Each structure stands twice: as structure tokens, then as C-alpha cells.
Amino acid sequence: MTVSVLVVDDSGFFRRRLKEILSASGQIKVVGTASNGREGVDLAEKLRPDVITMDYEMPVMDGISAVREIMQKCPTPVLMFSSLTYEGARVTLDALEAGAVDFLPKNFEEIARDSSQLQKILIQRVMDVSGSRPGVKTPPPSRSPSATPARPESRQPAQPARPARAPQRPSASAEPARKPAPEPEAPRRAGPKTPTRHYQVVAIGTSTGGPVALQKVLTELPASFPAPIVLIQHMPASFTPAFAERLNRLCRIEVRQAEDGDVLRPGLALLAPGGKQMMIENRSGQARVRILASDERLNYKPCVDVTFGSLARSFPGKTLGVILTGMGADGKEGCRMMKQTGSVVWSQDEKTSVIYGMPMAVARAGLSDEILPLQDIGPRLVEGVS
Image 1 (spheres, rainbow, N blue to C red):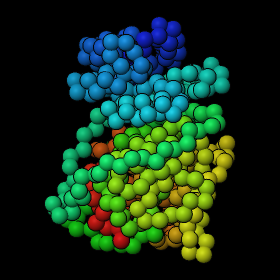
Image 2: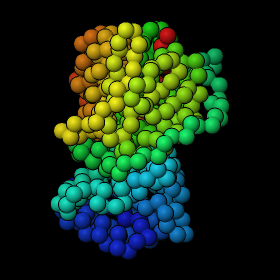
Image 3: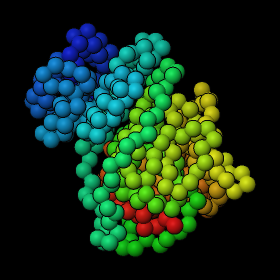
Image 4: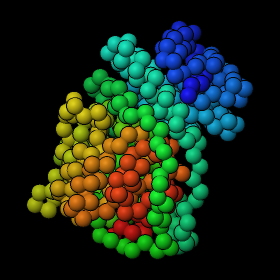
């Protein structure tokens, strides 16, 4: 099957180069190009492409505004091109919230070392995105009014340090392209009342579609949430400080990027820094974060399996692992280790996942204690974690 693509960018050189690379695959046909967001919206309605690549800074209409309008008029998977800077991260997160599925750095040198690798990564990412669910709408959670948390209060975010090292390309480019088949078994849904259980840590792993999914889950939690939370999102090093800042601003719990030596405590969510690995150690009853340089053999930096595996060792039978939307199968082996020690695993369902890859891998391996729609996960955490 040929995937049709609309390229939207104000740079004529970039449009030509991208069209040249994608068309050479034989799997992709560039059906149109646009030089600004307004043209992009009009061509999206006219051409109905399978995927749209979108720049964020353009005349007439910027990329974020274009994404919002496309999601209203003709929802289409959008792959954003952005700069891997702190400010570029903020803009890209806005685009993802507007409905974009994924992103890549616009500077091709940041994507790949050579032209053959560049072609492979670009084609792979477009094919991956073509199988996504753009603009997934989740209904409000099913729960009693008494269980509904109050509206999140506005808080001033802690100012994260800007990364000093050169940014790294998104590790998600290594994720496999297989479009998941429908899950064969009916998922087990939440009942009317969740039994409360004591967990020493809640761990959430995700990839494509994760920034919006995490925001949906974490904004449901009260400031008094009784367990520490660790977050693993496939994301480059320059993006995680801005993402942690955004979550901290929107949530009542505290959210920040993890640092080596951080102590886990209730009501605090620590986000694994991009480009590195986060492990949790439990010594003398005190749990601390270890931030380590990543092994080059690992495709994901940070890697869900690495963090979940460390929790399986440090908190046997006392961890709740949650796998949200994302490509690939990262998290499956970490969930397997958790289950072997008696811990509990939840996974997001197919209907509400932007990409049903990571949660599908966990469910098909028989590791999910429950398969839940996204809108129910936050309320279930509130009701079920003591």
C-alpha cells in the first residue's frame, strides 16, 4: 500500500529535499506541497493525504494553528518538524497537544549520520505515523461526582536548567513500523469500584502520543496522592525539561525532571531525562534515583524496560506499572519482571491509544492485569492507590 503525504513548509529547499527522500522509497507518494499553514489546511481538505509533515514557523498561518484546524476539519496524522532546542521543545509540545502525532528535528544532521540512514529514518517515521489515530477523543471518565478531583490550580513551575550538551535525536526513530493488528481478546474493564491497594511506587511508561496521555492522567491526581510516581517518556534530552515544566504547571502534584540522587516521595512525579537511563534503588528503606549514561546498544533513551526492571528488583510486589500509547514494545520485558515479583500492570486500550504498540505488546504477552481506556486511568489511580 502506498502512503500519500502532504509536505507543508515555507522553505522551498526543504520541501524539495523531503519530497525527494520520501518519493525514493517506492512506498510513499508526495501528493502535494504547501508553503504556509493556510495552504496546508486547504490542501489537506482537498487531497485527504494519509500523513502531513508540518513545519511550525511559517507565514500566513503557523504550524500549530494549522494542526488545530486540520484536526477540526479532516483529522490526519501530522508529523511535526521542529528544532531540538528548549524553545523548540515548548513549541513542539504545543503542536502535540493540538493533535500532531509525532515529531522529528528539522536539521537533518540531527536525525542521521549519513544520507542512507536519513532516508531510512524519515521513511520509517512516516510509515509509522500513517498507522496512528489522529485527534483521538476520550470521553470523560465514568465515576461518581464525589470522586471527581477539583479543577487543577495554577502554579508557577520550577525553572529547569537548560541542557548544556548537544541535543540528541529522538530515540523513537528506531521503533518498529508494524501496524498493530486488532487485539484478539476482549479487554477487562474497570468495575464500578476499585479495591484499594498499597503501592510503594507507580511507574508509567509511554512513547508516541505519550505527552498528551500523561497530561490527561496526571492532571486527575490530587496534590495528596499517596505514592511516588516515576515517568518514562521516549523523548530527546532537550525536550524533557520543557515537558516536566509543562506538567508541573498543569498538575496539582509536583512534576520535575529527575536528577541523580533524588528521593522518591508521595505526591512527586519524576520524569526520566532524555538521552539517559533512570533506575530506582531501594537501600535501607529509602528509594533514590540513579541517572546513568545510556548503553549505545539500547534503542530507547530513556528505556521503560530499564526503569521497570530496576523497580521489580527494588520493590518486589509493591509496584504498579502502567503502559500507555506508543510504538514498539518497550516496557514488555520490564512488565514481565514486575509480574514475576507479584506487582500489578495496567495497559491502555486500543481505542484510546494514538499508537497501539507498547500497550498491545504487554497485553498480548498476558502481562496486563487490566486494560483500561485512557480517561479511566487517572480516576482509577485516585481510587485504587493507598
